[in-house]
Every structure is written in structure tokens, then in C-alpha cells.
Image 1 (cartoon, rainbow, N blue to C red):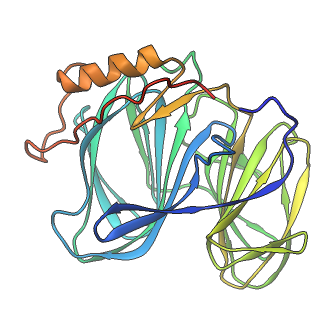
Image 2: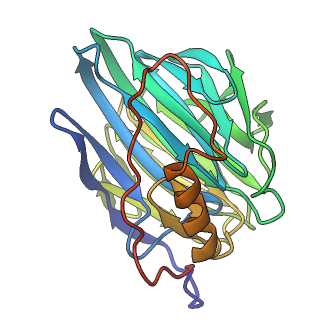
Length: 295
């Protein structure tokens, strides 16, 4: 992370293809904003119809993160090397803690509309080598705020606390506005935030943002006023600024040696276990990028 004083800034999301018929809007990591609090990856997908039984992501490994899956529409089957098999549907929450190493697959139900977000949370150094874990929550709390409803998927917000376990100061909120107007959103002065539009748009200090553009807010503010369109849906994610990390392929670490060891273990079929139910197919690790530096 830059040592310069952070300022509020608008960033572009990047349309990123994940397959021949499926793309996502990737808010970050961004070249100029790698993390927001401990959140280090933000993909928004859909709404898009899944019409193939071969759709999904084959078994692949992770270290050093938690994955957070939040669906607005659709359903998907999560399998992992702990033996977990869990279908997640709209309004339900999956949190997988990779820790020292886990592998998993994701398989959307064919002939369904998939719409939601996939996020990663960088684990702090003291938790990065913990044993892997998985948790599923059928319900998460929500509360009225301004012109809409806030659903809390991580941390605490507006008097509500998510049941999901995290290992650093964090917040994640789905904000759905049923009518147009201005809403004052409370903030933690010690947190930095991203406000990412999913549907509709919002106005911040005279600048209109939709799903192609998102807002970064540095620590120091107690609130932000957002003027939203009717039906707008935003994600508010944030937390205490994160120590420098390296993001490469599906791994998050502090040193290149950790990444080299993780890649070698995946290739040699060590450490990450086996995901039952998919078959022999699994993702192949790319060649390691040289000169990786934490930032």
C-alpha cells in the first residue's frame, strides 16, 4: 500500500472474462488500489443464465485468505477438501477460510440465473497459517437505513452484526434502496471503504457512479451521504488498512517464498487435499511470476 496520504477517489471496474460465455466486473485489486481494509478481491457477476452442466470452477487451491460468497440470485454447490458439500442460494452466506491451504470447487445449478459477488479477505499474519475452515449461514441480519435496507455480511454495521467469523477489523454490507433519495451512511473513522454499485447508480458529491465505477473512502470520516436511484444496490466493504500482501493466482501471502512453496505443493498434490465429486479435473497452476513484491 502506498505510504502517501490516501484521499477519496473514484476507480474504474474492469470487465474480466472468466470463460467463453462468462465475464465479471472486477473492482479490485486495482493497479492503484490493491486492497480496501483486508478485502483484497471484489468480483461482481451477472445477472447471467447458466445453461451448461459443465459450468463452474474446477478444484483449485487457496492460501492466506477467506473467500466470501454472496448471491443475489441463483444457487451454486460448494465442495472443498474438508469434505464440505453446501448449496448456497440468494440471501445465504458462505465463508471459507483457506489458512495454510485448502482446495475447493464451485458449480452453479444449470438453467439458473447467477447474480452476486465473490470476495476475498486477506488473513492477518497471525491467522495466515491457521487450519482451514468453512462456515455457512442461512440468515444474516438486516436493518432499515435511509431509503433502503442494509444486510450485514461481515462485521458490524448500524447496530447489526454478521455471524461470520473474521480475523481483523472488517465490515461488509449489501445496501438495497427501494426509492430514490439521499441516505446518510455511518462509517468507522478507523476504516477505509469501497462503495461498489451492483445495480442502478448513486451520486457522490455531484459525481454519478454505476457498476463501471466505484468509490474509495480513506479513514477519517464518520459518515458519507449517497444519493441513490430507485432500485440501486451497492456493496459497502471496508476495514482497518491492510499490511502489504502479494496476490498471485489463487494465493495471498507476504513473501514470494510462500507462493513458491504453495505452487510446488499444488503441483505435487500435497497440502491442499482432494475435492470429492468433481472428477479428475482440476486447475493447473500457471508459471510463477518473477520478482513478486508485497504491496
